[in-house]
Image (cartoon, rainbow, N blue to C red):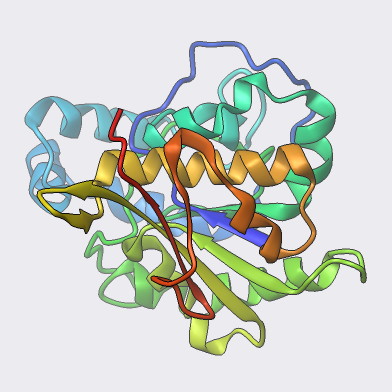
Length: 262
């Protein structure tokens, strides 16, 4: 199976990586035109385009100016160690053994990206900010969904085919709707399972964004720790107080719920 995650807005390029192994992103040549398009925007335009504060917009402009297609340490860092948001708190990749990162994670985990398309955990990235939902017009279309087209879907299909024959060909969607939309799931000839996480609040089960993000990362970690080859094994996930609710689930939408919000 191939597990898909969203990236994070927050980045950590100060903590040294605990693993030397690094790979190159497949779609650096696709990232370059996006960077060139973004360099044409003034900070106030970036603020409007991305709905950012002036401070964050200025930082984004500096990063666009500094971005280069050559990706090497120390100006670049492995994606799974560079992203530093709620999902990645749950994943806790800094505590994974290098062997687990080089082995299972590199083969079975994919990170969707507005700039890089689809990343492997150890692919190097440079600091950037570009959410998939950004309406950035380019020669490839009026937004990033049109720009990437079926490129990401084809990359997902290739990664599935590259897995050992004993491994189930299924995509496990642990990404947000904004990012998974770029996968064009209807074009992928494989089963897609989506995990949902809900808390009991006010007498009903609700998706609490922060908790759901952490749970997505924790589920990816669960798969890595247990070297799962079949999606069915994810039903045993019981981290952070969540557990699989069979009655609330259907064949490809799996509901994980908890009543203890601690």
